[in-house]
Length: 281
Image 1 (spheres, rainbow, N blue to C red):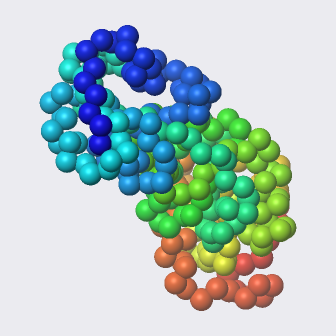
Image 2: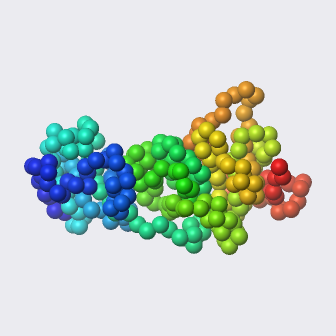
Image 3: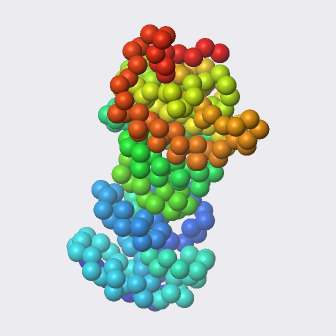
């Protein structure tokens, strides 16, 4: 590890850590910023390239125990760090990583349980979905246009860096990619909806290969995408109850499908068995 002590806020080695609220600058340069102990720890444990680590002077001894010889550790005084990033540097550590090329559909298809998001536009909700996906065994995420940058500082912070250990694809045409995964790789598309015309979650079984789809916080999944799905599932709720936040709903549904993996699957095409086959509108 190479320690480099920084005394000048205009030092070019600090450039990736400026303007942290402008995520597009990092995307343009192929970089991302990880903030906080756990997120940085998971970045360092991943196979992503780490450009540098920025630590406050008070935290340098803690991170000085790292044994990676390829790391560049930038050490700054706390006051200078807060001036640099534009807010109090209370976490004491950040790291700059380099983005990787988007995973192809073949890479996503190596898993059995995927999550798709259509216009989930709140970074905190997306971060929570990434974290829940990692907890409940989801092997990849596919994000449609309108979703936040999964490697933005805010999403990474909420997800606790769990996105570093799964495949995440941002696609230009979500419907086309899902159609390909369905036709070419045998995935069943499962729409999450609110309403009576759907399988109740507690009766839903998990197919061998599934993509669970979550929609926009206010409007849910679009009607065209729902129509293209093989099944619809819903969380039964008391009459008059408010709908659940998409991240809360994702936690409940992904837990159910994780548990359902251990159950015998219903036979395809047998109407006497719950949870299999298409649901008509």
